[in-house]
Length: 426
Ligand code: GAL
Image (cartoon, rainbow, N blue to C red; front, top):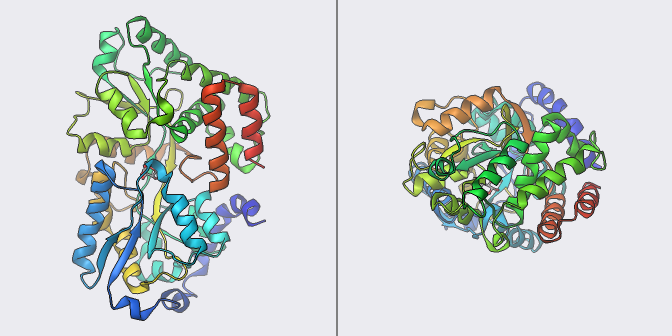
């Protein structure tokens, strides 16, 4: 029931937020924290950020935490695996056995709803008022982390999912400009040109969730952002005629992709592009953090553009941190969350991570050219949520789609894929 009402309620929630004020300050800042454990000062922060720009971003947060929360000690509870493929399983079993970390990373939107519905998160709205966050966090993010007037996490950033990263030299060698093809059809034609020029697998992809991202980008391009978003709130039918047409095109794209995809994580796909073995990969802009950490230069070593056919659409997701019910070190976690929401914390995090701040008062000149462009697009583009990264739907739905997409990678059966996608939405 709550899941059904969530999408309908998000618009209303923004209004409620303005009206409801701080009526719950007390109950959100006191509660079940174990004061004995607090003496140890350890704060276990659970993420899946273990290398490259992701780790550098986390380190940035930790450096501000160490300064501003010096009574406490950061403990890294990270579990490696892109997009939390392993971490979410470990987290689920810890939550089930009542052993939550002090805080964990969760995506704003549908994914957060899983934890909210299971009563695993505390309401942070009192802390929002204390820290002035209600006025400084982007409004559409506030909507995505709020339910019935309660706010359940502190967003650290906004990432863009619909981004293609390309190798300009590989394109040039095949006689192609380092510019975005106008549509999925044009992109497919360019892939054929690349293959004719000796690039066997011009499109680099990796394990199932990266394929889900590609599928989402094709769906946005073919259906448009509104009808695409409707796939998650029920206003667009997964069984409608435009869906298989898009799935066919997605299937054609896979024919130009690397066969070893199932065993790869997203950095491997990016590496294929920068090594010149592929021309393109589609990946969220944590890729910008990785490329930066690898010492590569925009325009020389790589170029980027919104996935063909999605120019003017910002497919968004946001990493946020929560206060789990029963967090061992409540005071330390609150200090972590305050850092996550702060200007300093977000600058140190996002300048390394490839994302843009969740706050609206950041100084763009602290950021590089990619992030500056992303900030402008976030403010002006049409928005679309990400399924693979939790802004569109809860985890069960995401898992079902990833599994369907993984099967399609070997079967190529469009009918079966459509059926499974429709079933996942039930
Ligand atoms: C996403 C997460 C990003 C990035 C990515 C790849 O789910 O929001 O911050 O970490 O996974 O691991």
